[in-house]
Amino acid sequence: MIVQKTRFVVAATIFFVVFYFALPILVGYRPEWMSRPAWGVVNWAYLFAFSQFLMSWTLAYLYMRVAARFDRMSEDVLAATADSTGD
Amino acid sequence: MSLPLLMFLAFIAATLGITYWAAGRSSGASAYFAAGRRITGWQNGLAISGDYMSAASFLGIAGLIAFYGYDGFMYSVGFLVAYLTVLFVVAEPLRNVGKYTMADVLAFRLRARPVRAWASLSTLAVSTFYMIAQMVGAGALVSLLLADSGIGFTGAVTGVGVLMIVYVVFGGMLATTWVQIVKAVLLMSGTFLLSILVLARFGFDLGAFFDAASGVTYQVEGRTVTENFLEPGLYYRPPYGALDLISLGMALIFGTAGLPHILIRFYTVPDAKTARVSVFWAMLLIGVFYMMTTFLGFGAATLVGRNAIADNGGINMSAPLLAQALAGDVFFAFISAVAFATILAVVAGLTISASTSFAHDFYTNVLHHGRERSPGEEVRVARWTALVVGAVSIAIAIILGPGANVAFLVGLAFAVAASANLPVIVFSLYWSKFTTRGAVWGLAAGLLSSIGLILVSPGFSSLELFPLSNPGIVSIPLGFLAAYVGSITSREPSAEAKFIELNVRANTGLGAEKALDH
Picture 1: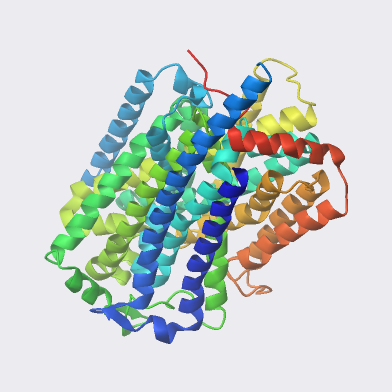
Picture 2: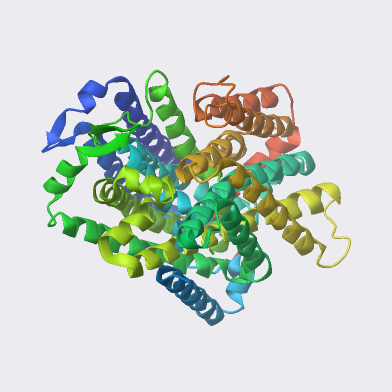
């Protein structure tokens, strides 16, 4: 159970760290890509910044769903331990 | 007395009245420090947002965007993404393992005295940096409201600072969770109203709004320049701008998980699940708020103008001046009052976490081996600590002056938190071979290197020994490295044995502090 939870957390953490640092790295070192207009006068740098908000909310939502499943498993484990020790 | 000032005072009185009313309704539970561990998920989410959205968020980011456009918005992005670190890495295990302070988590496995001593020092340092920013914001706000009276920034900072600390130390401690909640609601609605008014000026046409932001005209040294505020690079300029931006990003997303006044919030809820739910609520609120900083910042840039802001109170006053330009003195007074309540609430949260940590960790546990020599001594020490931290912040705020941006100053607090606190929290929760020496080295290296680099950075001294204004990119790895080296050069079987217990407890909540029944 802990292995599964860790796997999700590690994968999600790596993903958001890479996604997040892509923004300042691209903005800092490839300004000519990022300042191209994407929607009207709004450029890619701004859209990418907005996408960080969506990314955060999505990952948080996914984690809430996954974690709710682990809660049930963890309750089962606790119940099983309590039974076996006669506690 | 001017009309805005009178209305400002009326709004403040009303806010405090609401707070006392709300706090009175929940008597008992919230009277305790950890509020009886009975705060619900969404309440705690609101309170986290309240603790988090400080003068930096409201006054500072709006100011940075109004002056420099896109680069200011980078703070908004970092401040939100940071909560993923909190959610994934620290919120739940911390709730299951700790009691009152960050040091409790470290002391669970390691030898308590040295670890508690350093942890409380770093808590004090982070809180002081954070507090300086709030004092600068409060001083700028009040000196703008008192502009006709001739009281300058120095007088305003001193007066407001002393009042706030006295209020928090002697009156406000009981109600802080409710201060945060009331303030979060006020701040969200004030920001929402401002954003709507800004958009109304552009006929609710986002295209027209961004068009205006892409060509902002202002004067520099008598020359008129037009800049595209949607483009990055106006604040963080070459040659070190890109590195500085990355360094800032590191401090922001790793710093939140090390902020003492945020961590303390996870001890007020009944269990890990509620801690998780409260982070989720906080992320929704904080995210919506930071998205709206776009409208505040570009609104101030286009409708008030950089020069007018600089002449009337400085960069931190962009949001209140925007309110005045949009809807006159009443709205200006309202937004100023919201900003003031924001600062007061954050000062309350900071004061409590700093003074609790010093009194509980350093004074009682380190100096007096865990015994109170006389009843109530810990509370007295906590109050003195609050006064000292307050006085130091006021003094430094006066030295820095009204021109220092409060979001930038808070960014430094994040850097210290990320360098000193985060490495030891992460290792202590997830690494079985972590030792007391590792914790002390990590805390010391992170704390000293981040503060040292700040002191020789371009923002603080003319030495220019360190070219970046944000120390995170150097000091965060240093903190991790020192904690790692300290651990592998020492062995501590007891800490290793305790890790298994900690791991079970962190993951299941077995043996964690339960909610109190009243």
